[in-house]
Image (cartoon, rainbow, N blue to C red; front, side, top):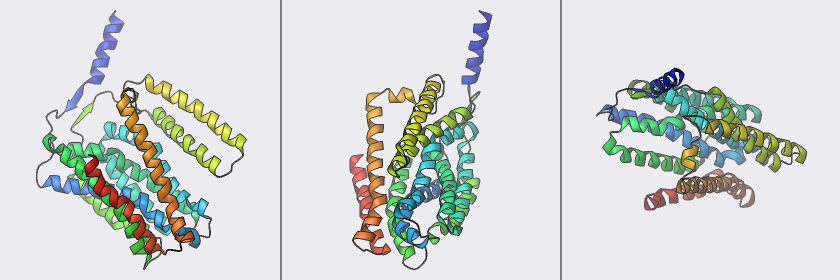
Length: 342
């Protein structure tokens, strides 16, 4: 009885939230600088997810690699983001969203510089992996920072502006890539991130707020983070292995390993008080259906956006500028349709 009482008191102590419980955002003019900082980081992260698509044929030709191998320039970036987005978000709750964001800007900026200096495909892919870690750190805490920056009665405005930045970055990517490639080589696609990244870090260090509250006893679970990364990494790895004609027995071994790791991960998540993967939300039919719809829609769009430059360049013989302008029409339509859908 005493043991149960002590355990309950300890649990209540761990659930205790300390800090400024009445926090209601920043005030002018600091709020403007803070939002500009979050917009810059998010813009760079989204931009680099699409800016390479237009340049893939040119990069493949200059590095003397096949079109299928050059896809890894995009895949490595997206894969790392998917593997680490949830762990970095959890890390932000534990160590501070501002700290994770600023470190993400540093990693992303260094990764951009390494990409610009890469002279072969393996080095470029490794640099993109490094850049992906930074982009994941930025994206994982971006919305949480908006909740700290904006007053509660204007939170919807902040989220809306955030979505607008994502749309603008998606539209800008192909056009900006086409403009740069019209007078410079592909390394400049990454080099332009460096001065913007430095300016973003300086602004963020001065104007971004620290976490208003924190939960006592909430610790970052490294085992959970590694299992999360392994589950998503194995899933994409099996798909990539099959698409690159890897022997079936190796693909099957990967699928079996994926099933074991995923089962262990799900079992761990179901027993956690604060899981990285919110299974309680996935039990809600409308939420789970929305998530599945988003995943399928995003997958279809990314497949088209990655394949389209090769179709336009190799089959229809467009140059980089024409390819970029044609590809801009897709995200440009999203900018106008998104408000109607909301």
